[in-house]
Image (cartoon, rainbow, N blue to C red; front, top):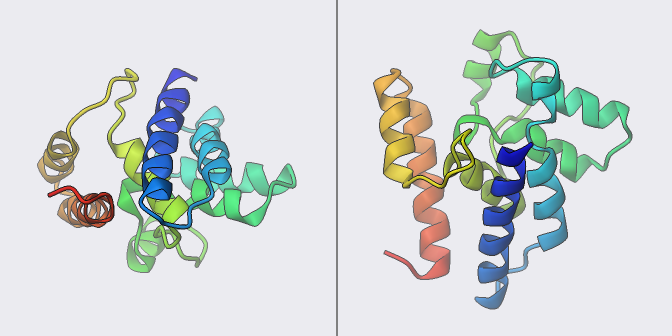
Length: 152
């Protein structure tokens, strides 16, 4: 899938930049997680692809850190209350580790057309769909990673 390759390329670039800044980031994990983040789309194209993808990854015996990236990449993260509304299993669906945040963020900057888009475009799309909490989470990850990179 071209989208996953484009997300992986951006995520690896970001991870390497952070490594050069002295941050402890597992670039290989970022690459693998980014390549597999949408594996659940093989069965569904709804937001549930995160949960389905985590199930596929677990059944395949993939490491837990890869499973967490798949599970936590959507919408800048999904809160427990949002997950409950979606009927998802009780779990944490918000990115916690730097690797999880990098993949989630890169996914929001790459359209399904494999083109990179400004973060503001993604935020505006979330807000236009009434998903202001997701927009805020994407904004927060953008600011966090930008600060780590020394960007405004």
